[in-house]
Length: 52
Image 1 (cartoon, rainbow, N blue to C red):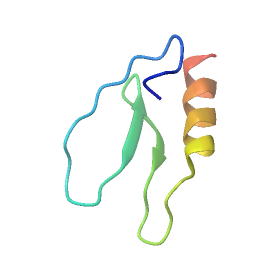
Image 2: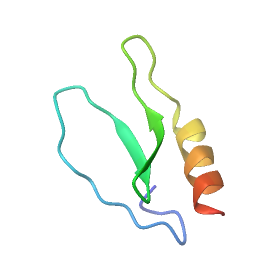
Image 3: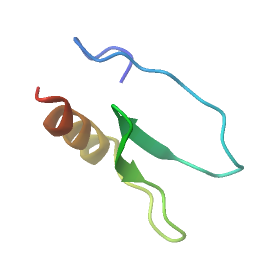
Image 4: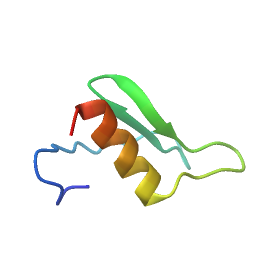
């Protein structure tokens, strides 16, 4: 995601195994117990939420 034009990425350490993607404070993707979103789905959610 760091290479996507117009998207600023900040990595914040969380709990072990945590993966939550926020856009302007809004959760757009999250790893669940038995589900990890694909990179493509995370990028699509970020683009849609960010208006790109």
